[in-house]
Image 1 (cartoon, rainbow, N blue to C red):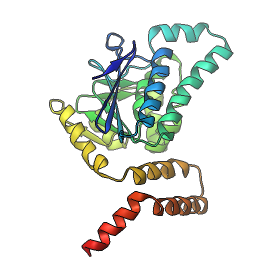
Image 2 (image 1 turned 30 degrees about the vertical axis):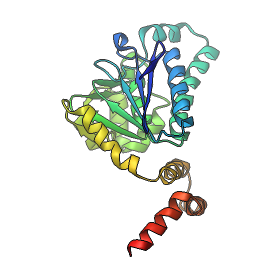
Image 3 (image 1 turned 180 degrees about the vertical axis):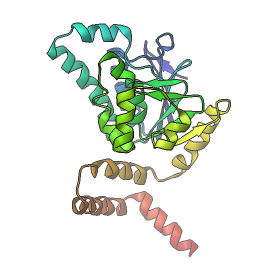
Image 4 (image 1 turned 60 degrees about the vertical axis):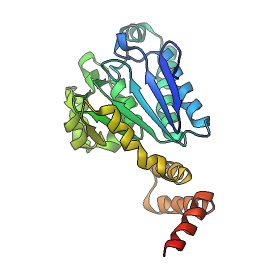
Amino acid sequence: MAEANSTVLYEAEGSVARITLNRPEKRNALNEELIVSLKDALGRANNEENVRVVVVSGAGADFCAGADLAALQRISAASVEENLEDARSLMELLILIRSIRLPVIAAVQGRALAGGCGLALGCDMVLASRSARFGFPEVKIGFVPAMVMAILRRSVSEKKAFQLISIGDQISADEAERLGLVNLVLDDEAFVDEVDAFLQPILRGSRSAIALSKRLLYQTDAMNFEAAVECGVDINVIARMTEDCRKGIESFLKKN
């Protein structure tokens, strides 16, 4: 059964933790309470022994429409220190998603805009319903998708990234997949079932291997080739010593 606070639903069902943004009347818009609750839910999932994957979705019609009106009003009147604290909270969320051992998958239905689009792209993988929409409309109010830029720039070409942030139009799920922002577009009617089907190979895979692969992938982001390969040596050695690897090699040798 899902456990709820005012902004987030959390449910651990078998090996899957499901985290749902729970402000449907506000299109799941981001505010400080939701961001803090989301960080708490991710930390909880990461500490649950049986959980192997996290799915983040939105209640109601949309995934997340970005910052809500109250948050925008506070931004315009806040001091530098207050705005810095607020921005760092979102930064901590994006870093947390990449630093926990579990793969985090965004299941996007409806709109994922501005900070909501950044939240989706900040996850390790993105699954989208065919009717979903993505975009960074911040430029239209004189704002910048600043922290998300680090993720966007790693996902698409330089010119496409600038197009998305300078024009601010929404794009379809199919276009987002073509650009590399989305892993897979799924049918609207069968979305929930197809998300569950997508999870199965992850759930059957090695928990330690997936965790180490995630760590290495992001750890080598800013490294040159030699440093990245050297980092790979360290992870390779760690992987060899895991129980999953020993069992996997033993099973492979018995078959051959």
